[in-house]
Length: 114
Image 1 (tube, rainbow, N blue to C red):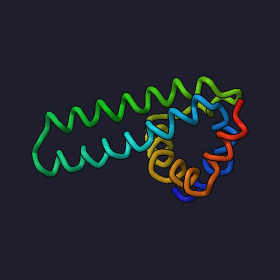
Image 2: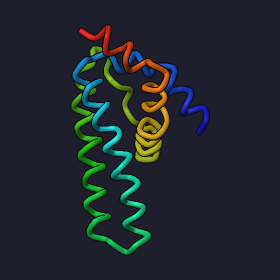
Image 3: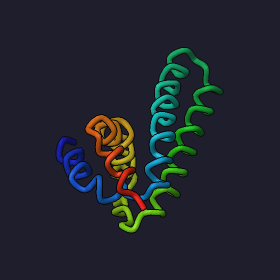
Image 4: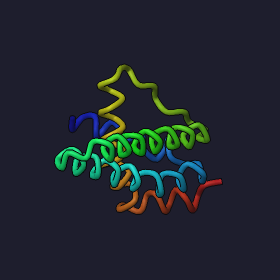
């Protein structure tokens, strides 16, 4: 897993240069994280309808981020299977995008975006 985190991080800036994509991510990634946490909370408390709504919110966030990535000059590297897709998406949402923001990379990319 550490190799996957590092691999994704090494090319992160290359795949996040579009102003629209950057702005979408700064809203959608926190939304995904909140929905992900609420999913866990809902399942623990037996609130299955809310869990389904959380899953739908997570799916919508990922779908919209996918549209944002279509704005990039450098297309994303295709997934090679379901496990790869889930792993990469969770790593981006929970680790690498927050790291991108905290490190100042998001702000620098936004300033240089066309």
